Structures are given as structure tokens and as C-alpha cells.
Image 1 (cartoon, one colour):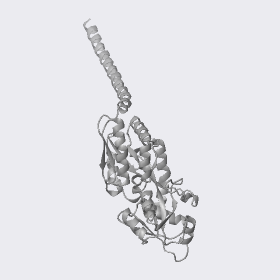
Image 2 (tube, rainbow, N blue to C red):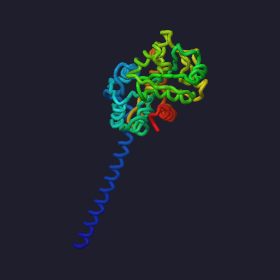
Image 3 (spheres, rainbow, N blue to C red):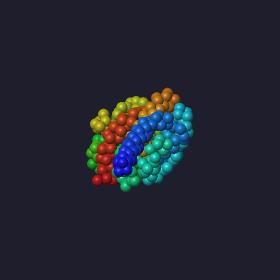
Length: 340
């Protein structure tokens, strides 16, 4: 009987251990499932603390102005502070690298512009992948570029200007706020596709570029709407085309470039992005809020006054915009001699 008792006792211990392991496995599985199910619930409660919105430019520009406009409304609608953190430098690459490494909890996001995703990575080495490291949330607004020429040029429309620029011995200079800016790339690609030679004149900012354009030091300039509205008011330039898909309300009689040169569509968007693993419920909530804010009449008027078209699109639409524009900017960088 002693041996039987020992055997039964040993078997009992084995069975107990197996049962214990089974319970622990089931408990671990239950905890895993619970954590997975709890994540969307916590995400749906976002935000419960202040949200930092990193802007990859200094204070005072169009991007910063738009960021402060939309974050103020987000703060009012969602009940938590949305704090703008201006982090300029390296064309915005420093700020975007910070976002790529940020926790994907919704409390550090960015209000970025198209150059940080579509241009800067073409021109220099950056510490982020423009596609894999971020999730697009929603474009708040997009600004098309406006093509102007100096009044000294005998042309009243795009076709006449191209014909003039292609004449033997004609010299066309165009300015920009610096190498690699949208104005630089747009001018280079436009001249290449139109078939004429143009010399880029870089400045230390758009203000200097516009000043020399008005004075006649340069003959052509791709500027944003607010710059060209001011330049046009001097009576010393002629607005001949816009780079948007449709004509702009600010220049209703001015045709698009695509009406003469198909598929030349260029805008500079500003919108929210987050780290790649940002939970979908947070992405969707923020996109919905941005879309509703972009449709508010007072907000739309403010944006239109800046030459910005209100957007407020979905994450999928935002991602499609990036996918569509990347080849355009790659071609523009190549035309400007800045990429292979």
C-alpha cells in the first residue's frame, strides 16, 4: 500500500502541475484578449491630458498660423489643451524625426506640410521614413501656387509667355525662398516641361524673392496666393496661371496650368500626422474633428483670406494625396538638378 500511495501522490502532483499550467495559460490568454479589447476603449476616451502638436517651422508663417487656428478649435471641442510646439530646422526634418520616435498614444502629433514628406527626403538624408514612420490623419488646408511674370514681359497669358520664353536669346530668371523649396522645384519642372531655359535665383526667404520679382530683378515667380495677391496689387506683375486642379476664387479669371500643360497640379498641404502605430480610433476621431472644423464658415473665411483651400479629408484620402504627389516632386527635384 505504501508504494501505491506514493504513486498516487506523485500522479496527483503531476496532475496539479498540469492543471496549474493550463490555468496560467488560460489566464494569460484572457489578459491578452482583455488588453487588446481595452485598447480601442482607451483610445476612444482620448484625450485625457494635454496634446503636443509639433509644427516643423518657426512661429508666424502660414503653417504656424493654420496650426494655431485649428488647435484652438480642437481644444474647445475636445476639452484638453492642444499645445503648439514650434521646432524648425533642416527643412522640418528635425521635427519629423521626433514624431517618428514619439509614443503612439496620441499625445504627441504633428501639423506638418508637404515638403517634410515629399521633398526634404529627396534632398538630404533624414532620420525617418516618410511613408512607413507616419500615419496620415487629415489635411486641414492646401495652398496652390500662383505663376506670375513681371510686367516687362510682353505676354498676357501662359501660352504667350511660353512662346516668349522659348525665343532664341531670351533669358528667364526665377526666384524662390531657397534651394529645394516648392517654388524652386515648381519653377524648374515648369520650365522643363514647357521647353525653355530658366535660371534659378535663390533667396533667404520668400519676402526677398517677392521683392526682387516686383522690382524686375527676376522675370518669373511661383508664389503662394497670399504672396501673389500682394505682388499683384503693385501693378508690376501679371498673374497668368494657377497650379490647382480648378481655378481659384481669388483669381477667377486666371486659368490653371493644366489647361495648357496637362497634369501640372501642385499644391502645398498642411495637415495632421502621427507616429505610425497611432491607434485607429484616435486617428478617426481626430480626422472627424478636423473635417468638421474645416467646414465651419468662420474657419473657411480665415483660410480663404490666406489663400488656402479648406480640406478636412479622411486618412485614406490624405494617404492617396501623398502617393499621387510623390512622383511629381521626384520629377521636379530631378529637373532642378537636386536628385538623380
